Amino acid sequence: MCQPSSLVDIQATIVQIQPLSADVSIISLDCPAIAKTAKPGNFVNIKVNSATQPLLRRPFSIHNVRESIIEIMVKSIGIGTALLCNTSAGSTVMVLGPLGNSFDVTSKPFHTAVLVSGGIGTAPMLFLEQTLTAHGKTVVNLVGGRTKNDLLTHNLSNCHSATDDGSAGFKGTIIDLLAHKLPELLANGEIKIFACGPHQMLKALAQFCHQHHLTCDLSLESMMGCGIGICYGCSVTLHSSDGVTKNILLCREGAVIDAESFVD
Ligand SMILES: Cc1cc2nc3c(=O)[nH]c(=O)nc-3n(C[C@H](O)[C@H](O)[C@H](O)COP(=O)(O)OP(=O)(O)OC[C@H]3O[C@@H](n4cnc5c(N)ncnc54)[C@H](O)[C@@H]3O)c2cc1C
Image (cartoon, rainbow, N blue to C red; front, side, top):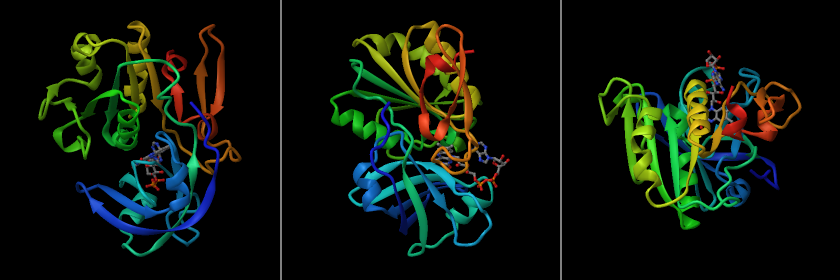
């Protein structure tokens, strides 16, 4: 998991806002300097307007990169995300990035990448899938949601879904689906899991990967302020294999972590 080499804070024009559902939109931002250096797993920290409220920026994973454009997938859950989703194309926002480390797609050999996501945790998976495909990996997406309305499979390929209520796809959690598919996924050789989603889902997945000796990168979320390690607002407690706990700043040493350090 590598740190990005270049960081910029730029005034970016919103090129397009594409609603995917009642509360989720894809927002395209013209950010050539970020698009050029972004890696999957990186995020940006956005000042959603020029007013003093909300004061803090809001972090979003980089969903896709197209030439000079970066796309973010935003779920409207509060003041900042609602403002962003209701902004018009042509307006500008301040975008700081690329931030954080990135998913590790190269250091260990594996045949199949299994991308496990839940809810808005699907946001970083398109960029990751494209990068893995460019590295010659087979990619399988497992996408979970509480109901079919929570599934975000936008533009992902080779996608299998699970819903808690069985309204679409496999009935059960995304971990149940992974367990069900594991023999088939392992049939072609080593696999590596990449995941993003709600805290409890990632906790359960870390435990599952530990039990089955699977390598897994998790992209975590936390409350976050500055995004650059100054405010200490995103401290997360992790564990090392010898039982020692340590606190990291998710904005600098994450948001991608080794799942083994997330096992309680
Ligand atoms: C590294 C990282 C990447 C992220 N990527 C995405 C993404 O790609 N797409 C996306 O839609 N969201 C993403 N998020 C979450 C997003 O940043 C928050 O939803 C957003 O900051 C909420 O702002 P708001 O002003 O709308 O909510 P607020 O009005 O500030 O809060 C509304 C409610 O949401 C809760 N809340 C706020 N922020 C978070 C958070 N980070 N985690 C859990 N609960 C929160 C608050 O406690 C409150 O209950 C990411 C977060 C991090 C840390």
